[in-house]
Length: 96
Image (cartoon, rainbow, N blue to C red):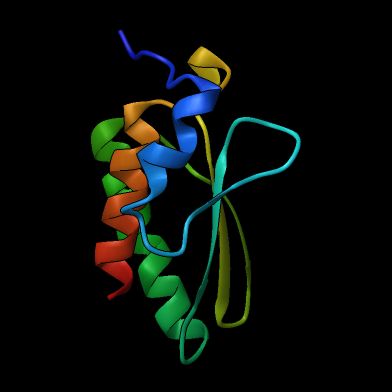
């Protein structure tokens, strides 16, 4: 079973995730990715979608042209879990 990261531990948990920050209003993390064009943004989203299916953990995201905004949290625990940290790290790798 997935376990929730305690709210007071979120800052420590994300300090090594470049560009990710806590969101206001809910226990989640957020990052905006910027790409050179729409095709690169969509390629990133496609790779992320394949990974999300593999681990059965899906992001909340929004895309306009070359920008992809991502919010991660785990609905099953009503907050953050290790799955969110793992997904954030993978997204950073895929965007590089």
